[in-house]
Picture 1 (tube, helix red, strand yellow):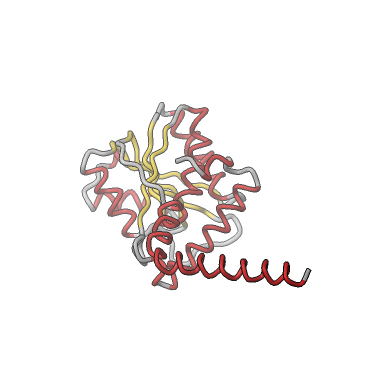
Picture 2 (spheres, one colour; picture 1 turned 90 degrees about the horizontal axis):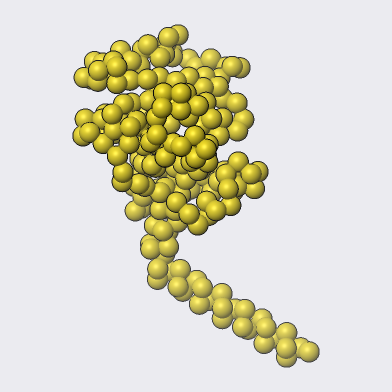
Length: 220
């Protein structure tokens, strides 16, 4: 009995050692693959590009959206921003939508190519956003959209939009962007590690809550 227990312990230690050795040797490939899983990227053109909702727009996301518009990969820019009912954002313009449109016009984007959609920060935030935005675009007969999302949030956002868009006949193409680190070295940056762990937890929360389908674990 004792020998059996010792044998199992020894085998477990050997297996653990081999696992650690494989991870040590191939850690970069494994971590890059994990990052790629959370930040899927499509390459198709679409009718509109959706700049995913935040309370304030990031400069890099605006630059990428304008590049997609200028290159002809999309025909119109849809900016989504969150508006909390219970708190006010300091120094944000009262008419933030008009402010955004004016700022984009100053950058050379024509007004008829811009649409701003305000959404509430109602739980679940990403899914609620997708429902409001795609309902709006469906009424405009939009059938395809590039979803511009930040980093590791992309997979959860993409699947939230995708499952809402499917019955509406709207195809979603994910397009992640990174601001504080790159996808090929995120584990070397504390922000990258924090974002990865946080988004893994949020992704599985959405998964187990039924907000996104189980098939999102293997499909794109």
